[in-house]
Amino acid sequence: MSKRALITGITGQDGSYLAELLLAKGYHVVGMLRRSSTVNFERIGHLQDDLELVSGDLLDEASMIQVLRAHQPEEVYNLAAQSFVQTSFTQPVLTGETTALGVTRLLDAVRMVDPGIRLYQASSSEMFGKVVEVPQSESTPFHPRSPYGVAKVYGHWITVNYRESYGMHTNSGILFNHESPRRGLEFVTRKIANGVARIKLGLDTTIALGNLEAQRDWGFAGDYVDAMWRMLQQPTPGDFVVATGETHSVREFCELAFGHVDLDWSDHVVIDERFFRPAEVDLLVGDPSQARDVLGWTPRTGFRELVEMMVDADLDAVARQQRHLA
Ligand code: NAP
Ligand code: F7E
Image (cartoon, rainbow, N blue to C red; front, side, top):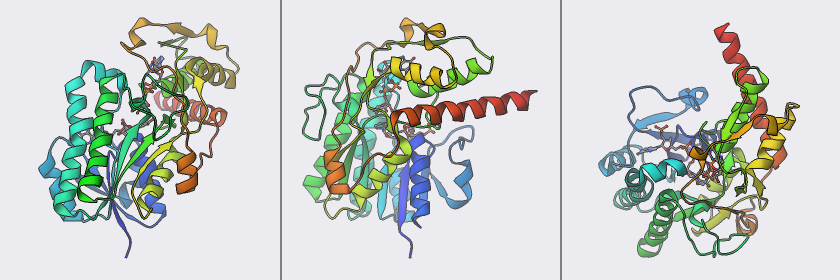
């Protein structure tokens, strides 16, 4: 009989890649959706016939108890969150309810329905924030710099706490930034890739950005979901940093993305104060050696390849929209 997995956040970037991976491994995949007034299947439309989609919300514990009872998964991947750092400054309470307390609601639902279920919690490099060492590993102390980062620290520790208190197989994947053509348009990499495509195809002339000197360890989401799965296959649960070990600035991302279509970024990027954050995370770079040694995981997609994949995908998508409107 095939294994059963529940994914929260199935409509998000990672949810769609993880669903593809689990389906390819023969899993029965149940995706939890929150109620919305419009269908939001942009990323999972191609998988819709292979998934079982059910209604539930991280803000409502009873809904998750009901989903767990009805579908009896062996593995739960908690990818749902208010995941945009900038929004966490304007909606800190909602971010805490979803991204922090939502984890406790889900863990508690799992504990009540079947404490033998293995759980993955989507933790984040944003927990390191104002970093105390470079690179950051599983033992680096946290100093979050946004309500989102603070909420993720809570989510991390409650995951560890349920492991230690109840002997549950709960895992915290401390993932550094991972991107793809399915990344939300508000995140800087997709904003640049989409902007480059629109400029190249004559729809825009500039992109407005904030801090170009911010540095991130950017990998490909399709590679990172494999690390999530590997964590739940281990005999003992744990915490794992998942990263490339390389860091690049927003400026470098711009150089490569515009360069890929023979444009000079400095002719098209304008700085707009609105995109600076009240507190910034300056230098994030992860040490993924534990993931390599224990999980046998390594990233496969390099930085240039990632940038070019994203720009090419947006060139295709924008050209398709133009043809549709013509
Ligand atoms: P994403 O694209 O923003 O997807 C977030 C998902 O959460 C969406 O499916 C969203 O549903 C769902 N969601 C939001 N609030 C919910 C609620 N109250 N109840 C149920 N579902 C809810 O995020 P992602 O990039 O795939 O990231 C996946 C997870 O990894 C998140 O927890 C994120 O914080 C974490 N993470 C991401 C990165 C990264 O670089 N991508 C790095 C480290 C950690 P709607 O479609 O209805 O909005
Ligand atoms: O910002 C700078 C900005 O919004 C990256 C989430 O998935 O990864 C993501 O969080 C950097 C920041 O991602 C703009 O100041 C400059 O330093 O793409 P981002 P993020 O904040 O790193 C972590 C690991 C997560 O866990 C989160 O869920 O880029 N930046 N100019 C800009 N950022 C945005 N969004 N827009 C700009 O115009």
